Image (cartoon, rainbow, N blue to C red; front, side, top):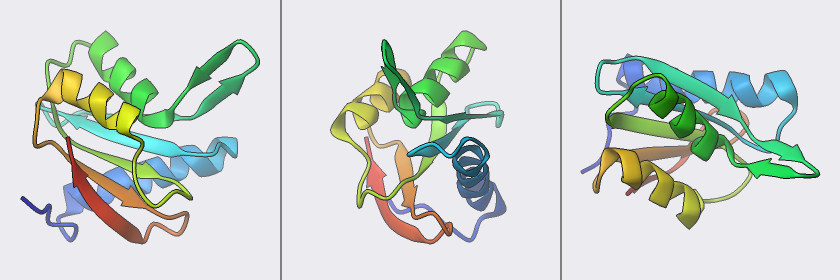
Length: 115
């Protein structure tokens, strides 16, 4: 099932992910929306002793705030697709079929994937 990227809520995910990435200069920025419509954002953490992807961290923030599922996710990255490990993290919380929007640094959609 394709996601309507013209829907304001889905565009918002890309805008938030883009902002997270730009604010920190990180490799990736991500945003997820929970089942109540709340959004969580994160950027890649790359410390010598801690490596966390933006999508994994945004999902962890949702879980730590009490989210029991996700409606959708977005990642802004230079990669052509979301990493398999990130899709697995989202699937752990949201189950199969959850849409993941992948956009470039300008916010242009590159691909739509699903867990």
